[in-house]
Amino acid sequence: MAAKLYELNTEILGKLVESPEASQNFIESILSDLPEHVDVETLSDVVVGDLNSSKVAGKSAEGFPQINGIVFQFKLNGKPAEMVLVMESVSYIKWWHDKSFFSYKMYRNHSNINDGVRRFVTFIVTDTEVKASRFHAVSCFNNNSGEKCESCQIHDIFAAKQSGNEDSMLENWIRALISKSDAEESTDNVSSITEASGYKVA
Image 1 (tube, rainbow, N blue to C red):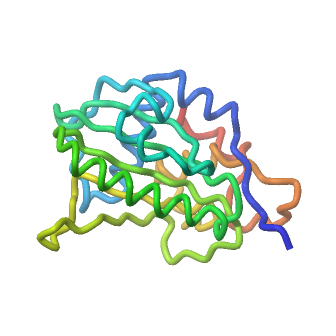
Image 2: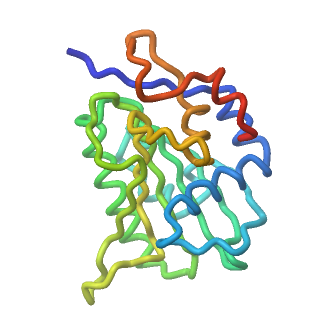
Image 3: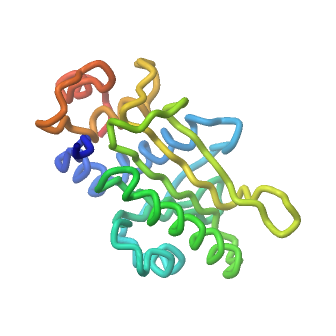
């Protein structure tokens, strides 16, 4: 049985990419969803590009055909930062290999270049069969001293694991970005685009 994937709403993605205000709002919604991990005092100077606009992300994606996305470059609390946004394009089991090894290469390349840029990799998981305990999970790699490398974080956002928190800007973004596949009949987890349009997300 083929996996059921939520589809990307290209209209909303276009607004996200084309509008600096929407891009900033989206980044803030991700970083503010887990305040214990990232303190967001100021966020500015957002520029959007493809994976190759980031030397680290472009190099890390080589050899992994399932890794396609965009890069937000910005200033976080006055310091340079990047967020790589990758949407799941195939079933999670098939995608997992590229996702995992891309993340590891990002961490290694990030550590080796040591350029003072804080990096975030955000994966939006669209496979409706994936069971997750949380809507948004964050992980870090350990450095040679066994300590978490907080300057390179991996964020997994599970589109099928909505908590129903209408005050969460991140959940509103995900509701807007994800369209239902014709093969997906359940409406229990993800709100419709009509409902999401009531929120000022873009």
